[in-house]
Image 1 (cartoon, rainbow, N blue to C red):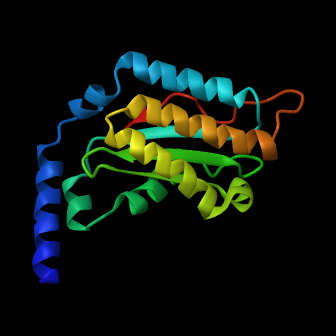
Image 2: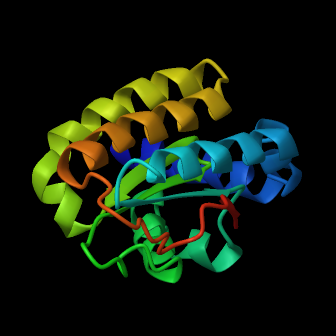
Length: 173
C-alpha cells in the first residue's frame, strides 16, 4: 500500500514539474510584487546587520527530479550559490520557495540560528504556509521578512555604518 502511495506521489510530482512554466513565478509574483519584496528587505536591513535573501523557483530540472531532490535539499544549494553563508557575522537568512512542489524553506546561517532555533523558524514558517495556502504569496514572503527581521534586530541591531553584504533583489531561478 505504501509503495503505491509513493509511486502516485512521484507521478503527480513529475507532472507538476513537467507542466510548470517559468511564467508561474510571474503569476504569483508580479514585477511590482518583486519590487515590494526587495524594498521590504532593504527597509529591514537598515535596522540590523543581518542579510535576508528571497529566491523563488517555478520547478526543478529533469535531473533534479530523477535524483528525487526535495525543496529541503535544494535550499542548501541555493543558500550556497547565493553566498548567504558568506556574511561577517554568519547571520544570513534565505527564504526559498519551490512553486511546483508547493513547498518552501527558511534556512539561516549558524550565527542567527543559534539564537532563533528550529522552533522559532517553525513558527514563522507556519504562518507563511497559511498565507501561501490562501494564495497570498507576496504577503506571506513579506510577513516572513518582517518576522525574520525581528530576530535579526534583537540579536544583530544596526551599529554605525551598516554595510549591505548581499543584494536585496529577489532571485528568480
